[in-house]
View 1 (cartoon, rainbow, N blue to C red):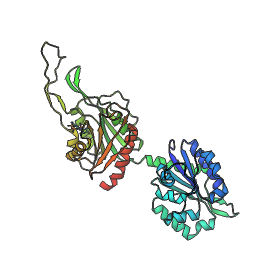
View 2: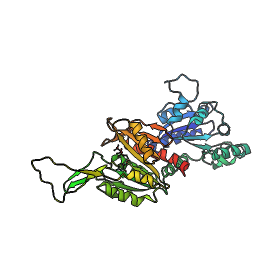
View 3: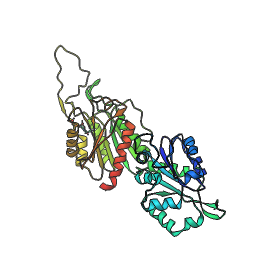
Length: 401
Ligand code: CTP
C-alpha cells in the first residue's frame, strides 16, 4: 500500500523521537520514500544526521539555512508529500497547527500541504488530558486531520497513563490502512467504461476500423476497479487481457456497443467513453467474401448512432466523461463536444503528438470541465492519466449530487 508513496515525517521535540527513527526505517521497508522535517527541539534529542542516514534524504530543520536549490523548501516538500505524518507531536505543535501558527519549517510546511496529515501526539498524561490540548485535537479532527491516539503505559517521566507514542509498527499500520481506505474511494459506485475501436464489417473477412488499441480504456477500468468500484468494460476487439475483477462485454460494431452500453446505463454512476467508435458503417455487409474485379469498388457508408450523444440526452445521475481525439483545433473542438453531448468532462488529446493517443503507452491530455476549466497534464502513463481522471471526478461528484 505504501509502495512508491512520498511521505514527509515531521518530528517534534519529545523523548519519543528515538521511535521515529524506526518509523522511517519501517516506511522505507514498505517501499515509501521518506523526507524528514525536525523542529529545533527534536534535533536536541536525536541528530538530523541519524534521520538523514536512515531516510537517505536531506533533513530540514531551519527555514534559514543556506539552500541547496532554489525551490522554496517548505512549498516543495508540501507538494511532494502524498502523506504527512507527525510523530511524535508535542502539545506545542498541536496548539500551533490548530490555531494557524506557522513559525518554523514544520508548521509552515504542514500549513502549505494538501496531503492527508496524520498526527501522533505523545506527551505526559496531564498535558494530554489538559482541556486546551483536547480542544485543539477536537478542532483538528473536525478539520480533517487524522489523530492516532496515544498508547497507555509507563511514560518517560515516570508516571503511568495515556500519552505514549504508539509502537512504530502500529503507526505504520494506520498509514497503510488509511491508504487502503483512500484507494477504495469508489466503493459502491458503478463505473461503465468503453474501450478500443469498433469494427464495421464489409464482408465476412474485411471491416472498416481504426487504430485504437484499447489501452486507455483498459487503464481506466483497472484504476476504477482498484478504487473499489463495480466496473463494466464494454470493449471493441483488442489484444489486451481482461482486467481482473472487471465484467468485460466484448463487442465488434458500434451498434453492438450501443446496445451493451445502454443496457448498463441506468444504474451507472460514472461513464467513461474512451472507445473510438466508427462514425460510419458499410450500408451493406456482403454475405460472402467480395471477389476482386477489374473495376473500382465503391462502398457506401451510413451513419452510426453517436452513443455518447444519446447517453448525454438520457442522462439522469450519471457523471459522463467523453474523449476527443483531435488532429487540429484541440480545445475548440473538444469544448464543442462537451456542450453538444451534455458531458460533465471531456478528455482532449492531440493524436498527432508522439506519446499521445492511439496505441501509445502514454498520453498527453487536457481535462475540460463544464465551467470552462482546462487542466493540462504532462506526458503520463495511461494508468497515471486514469488516476488523474478519477481524482478529478471524485472531487466533482459531491458538487453535482
Ligand atoms: N463517440 C460515440 N459514438 C460515436 C462517435 C463517438 O460514443 N458514434 C464518443 C467517443 O467514445 C468519444 C467521443 O464520442 O468519447 C468523441 O469521439 P470523437 O470521434 O473524437 O468525436 P466525434 O463526436 O465522432 O466527432 P468527429 O469524429 O467529427 O471529431
